Length: 104
Length: 454
Image (cartoon, rainbow over all chains, first blue to last red; front, side, top):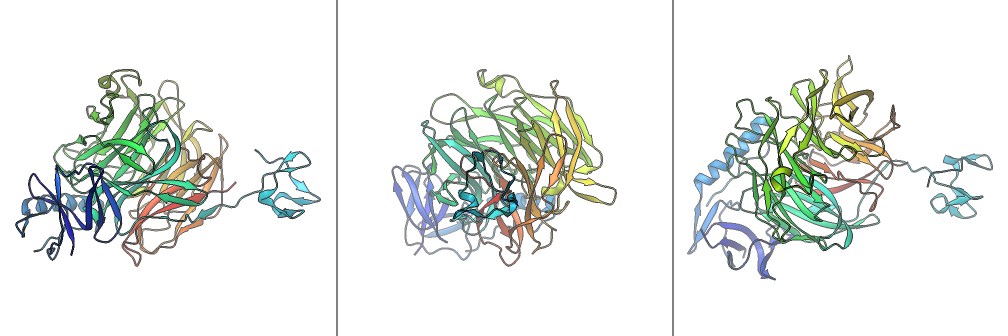
């Protein structure tokens, strides 16, 4: 079962991981698709690790909250970021970066 | 050492393969004369070339010679937005031994400002610290900068992310050349298209460490517009002879201009003065060229050649029969005046223009050669090549062919190179990119080493 890293101040899920722990006062985790990451600015004071979580159908960092087992999509934030990405596509004429998709 | 042996028993230099069992690479002297055999240009396949699996936006790479504690240690620092981790701006630091790179763990630099699709990190040689300018999806594609300590194969003690541009209206960047380190003012000079301007002008801001404490916090100077135009093709470089940053940019579809960047103080001045920018007189360089070879998501279009004290600029130039990739030469005079020299050379590798070609230019000091790279067209599956030119101060000589750099199928994105001299760690020049589209889409951010030979 996956692990999530949640920001304590607003319950926003900042990272999705295979596993995570706080080493030397900062976060270290294994990404869902593999590869270890150090996050020097994340500590146990600012973030918490929640193991064995069932993930939504489509998810993206910073676009969901998780509270008492309930996922909520940050629709305004998602729309704002996707507007930014569309502006980039419009400027370059390229197909990327694609819109971020989130689905419960 | 320069080669002094032109022939041996009637064999010319290129025919000498071994003498008394020694291969040409092992022969250093013949009858007291230095012997250096010719090396063909080649792509060096680095062991552990994969930096990050999957999609990795806005890839770039810089070179650092010291750790922050003062220990001499040569390292390369790759930067990118990691699609496998929120597209957050990320760094990965590696050491080089021969043709092998040993990477440290990926470092998430900032998760508070969304994804990042353009990055350029720099090594601050005065402070022996790392700084990076990056685009984000926060606000209206706001731009930020952050700094940290360089340690063995990692970055730590990150400061607070500093807002470089927060104007509304979708700020933009077009390729992996959005910053340069200026050691004279000890600043990172950052360029971008300021979207809030009615005509989307191109702007520059200076960023420097707030103080000498170890918190690594940054102070950002005021915005200065260097081109009031809707065209966003621009490049920035540092001129070590003049001690100034240099801008080149399009003001119309085929008009290239340039300016020098003048800081209010050198590195001993106040933060406010160092971060105060004025611009030199604008010089028109060409009305028949543009900087679109690296559009969009390619590498830099300008490089500094310290051996000849000139900049080389990669442009698409109207040669009468159409626009073709060309290296042009720019010199900066004592009055901050620009001169676009008559010297130029055509490039065989890379298309002359067009999105998705991943083009760029880098100067290789170890070989004293200029390297250009890119795909032969914007179509998926196009050959991705590099080639070299030499420059003797007045004219170019060409490799006359192209060396295959990658056969991966797709559009090459990111394509940033080490700007600073990496002769201490390799004779090749380093570049990173990832593949978008095509059958090799999402095959990861990879390190490429281009040895132009010599």
